[in-house]
Amino acid sequence: QVQLVESGGGLVQPGGSLTLSCAASGNILSIYAMGWYRQAPGKQRELVATITNGGIINYADSVKGRFTISRDNAKNTAYLQMNSLKPDDSAVYHCNAERRRVGLPPYWGQGTQVTVSS
Image (cartoon, rainbow, N blue to C red):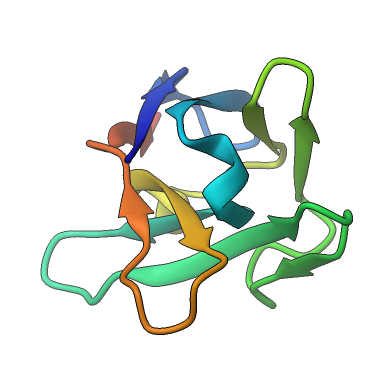
């Protein structure tokens, strides 16, 4: 099992910045990628960014150039640096960890609220 704990959400004005953290614990060797997804009220959960153990990164088009995902493998922690935030970025952000074993569902954190509003 892997446990994911997010932190860093909050209220920020448009154009502002926030950094989210996701600390992983447990059977870390069983995962090969970590990522962030978000879900706004009335919308489906969507990919924000992912990073593999080897450092391969993928971003949603809507956040390219504004968000940066990174990992500190020594701390088993993934980060999401969010700049130039827009009201449309408001959502619950969930940390995700994909398992090495094909077919098993990913692990999810409980989520952290990000609200972009003036």
